[in-house]
Amino acid sequence: CYVTGYILGRDHVGGLVGGDNNGTTINNCYVDAIIVGSTQVGGLVGVSSGDLTISNSYFAGEVRLGGTHAFAGGMIGLIDAKGDLKISNTVSIGDVLGKGNNGAFIGGQNVADATVSVFANNLNNYEANI
Image (cartoon, rainbow, N blue to C red; front, side, top):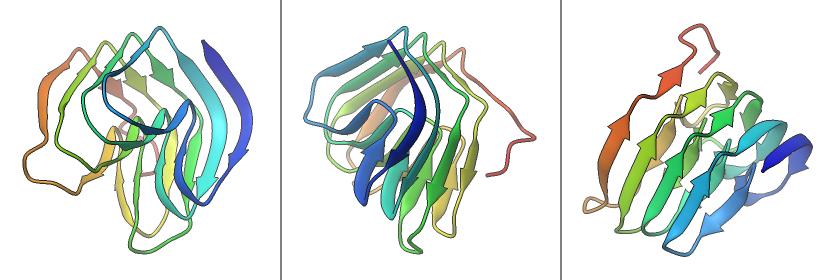
């Protein structure tokens, strides 16, 4: 799957998924889009709400965050519920811009008991604006 273009939303905005409900798998996907939102914005997923697997996927666009108490990430904007995340063989080379909590892969985590059990073979552009 792939997405290009311009995506505009308010909350839970992602290049592929705004918010996952648990058990979502993203594999072999590519996003090269400008993604704009006020809160919880991600290059692939705006908000993770449970088990999520992302593999063999690529983000090369731009995430723009409008809110100040918000989260933005190249892969996931916010981890917002208990679950197990597995992120492997991904590339995040896009810019993540905004005044909130920003990260090349994950913008932030809102719950203490969510885990990232796999984070392997991932690359990011250290020269990107984060």
